[in-house]
Length: 88
Image (cartoon, rainbow, N blue to C red; front, top):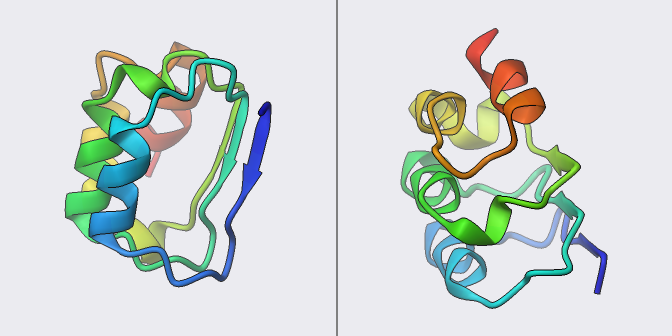
């Protein structure tokens, strides 16, 4: 699977943590717009090696809140995506 389009599916913090723990090595695009993952879900994604090959991560700042900082400083998120979040 190269793309996972979950926008508007009410994925919360627990769902984001489950995605972060999943073996999604082939995933290149993850769309979680309009999903209330909150700071905890954003932090789980940011801490996960599963995001290391992403080329696109679709999220709204309103959906992650203070979790934007975790995304901006993620050791796993590719640097072009980290830079997008560090501008927030």
